[in-house]
Length: 445
Image (tube, rainbow, N blue to C red; front, side):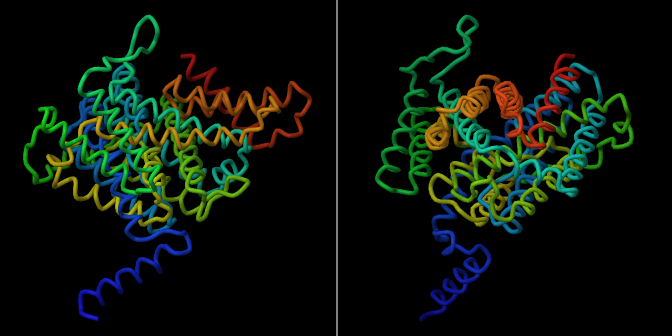
């Protein structure tokens, strides 16, 4: 055996010991491909997050770097400490709430608003430390867990359909079919069918092949501009160290802080449940391996993210794209994290991938995740209704958290109104009550 083979064997052995690949029925090659796939379906955040936070007056170049850094930090630690194929990054939705509502409408300086994000993340971490969050996640009823997994699938499928241009906004019908003969729509559809055809033939690199083919076709058609490969990361001095922690810690902002905490709690927890369920890692009660560690990692990542100047960090639903092609261990997440570090230097190349090139992967994940609905007890309306409400309200409200909120409330209503109130666990009672308070006192205003 030559030196290269010896080095390769040592490397594989190290990965086996760290991530227990054989135990999870996977290989290093599969995990690396899964990491690349997840990365390509969520790398958009390093371009979108700076645009949104820039509306609040933040330095977009600095936010680009901090977004890459926190995505790398969260994903690598999730992989190393919890051994789960779940990647983390700043949350879509919360960044818009931060920029357009807290800064735009309420008129707060971004430094103070980001301080509110930080204190919300501290509350999020405290819930984890005192195991309140663990208790809540472990006691979510099966019907709600199935609804959450399926709802996330529908939600990201809708994002994929939108990114491909297959559906577009319509003021009269809410949404409508886009221009199906547009080459961008056709490439998005082609990408989807490349994935499903190859996946049906058990080709695990289906998503990567699809993204590469559609991006190259986009380049040939003039949609993709080659602007180089390397760039030097800009300075982060205009963002890091500028968060106003003291100015944001006041009673007047308690509602904002609570909103950030509550939304992040259920967005991240719901995603962890959905992704691990799809990976076949959850048990009958919805628990998954290293659950406590995973909750600590995403809680701490949120605190660190806010401190360096990015919106709340969460587990990403796009992790399901890597899971769908075989990602089962933390090696997938570590690969994602390393790629986020590289993208700081390769931003022109990463930016070449158009939205429609990754759209097929998102739609494909939607197909896989909605299969959870087959396990719902449809003959029992007290279980079926909450699952249905949770699943459909995620895409219809364009919010994972709102779907979870209405699902919990409907579960409590159905069980109580049919005389089966004993089936309502204290966890469901507390969560449903919190969501009702949020709707009445926060959303109403």
